[in-house]
Length: 261
Image 1: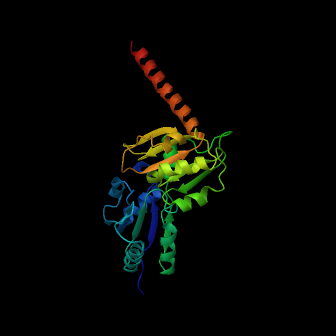
Image 2: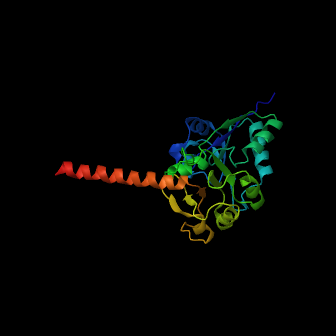
Image 3: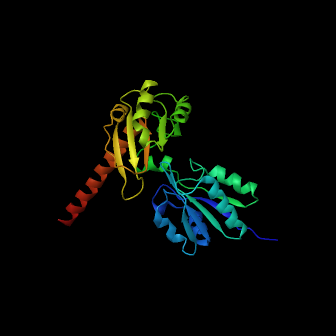
């Protein structure tokens, strides 16, 4: 009887390789084949030294491989006894189509392991000093995909304007339309907004403004980057945290200079 190899759906985290989990690193080191997505930092692949590595990512409608083809490749490799890692940015079950891949593997009788990853839905705001919840400001947050208008409208229907933090993934191309949709739905034009681009990497950029700024395209973020939009009063809390952090750094520097005199 042929022995099938296991397949691990592995979350690569939000960008910084140091945010990989220990289990993710172990699965990469043991892998014979790694199929990785567009948002995976190539430095992560150094852990898969003995594996074949294939890019199967999708960005803004450009597909290196169809989803059905990815399923077939994983199943074929596993049936040949190879250890397969399907490497996805963030967490495999947060807008990563990991559920579809897990179902396809189960139906084919392939052992499938899920290795959670740190999702950019939480890591990107945190990297910018923004808490997605804060006592007295926001007690809940909603993570929503922004690339499809109908899906976005349905998702935010239950969100209370200015009381819930919205975290929008894959929404930069529709940022202006998203801002107008929220203001027309009762959100204040002065609601704080942040865009965290290339979060947790050396190229990270953070733009801060309001829904009104976003609606009028008064945004300064580089083109072609991966970005997370954070909408709600917690953005103002994050600005306070960042300003206090800057003050603390300046104070430590001043003390260090004084001690050297």
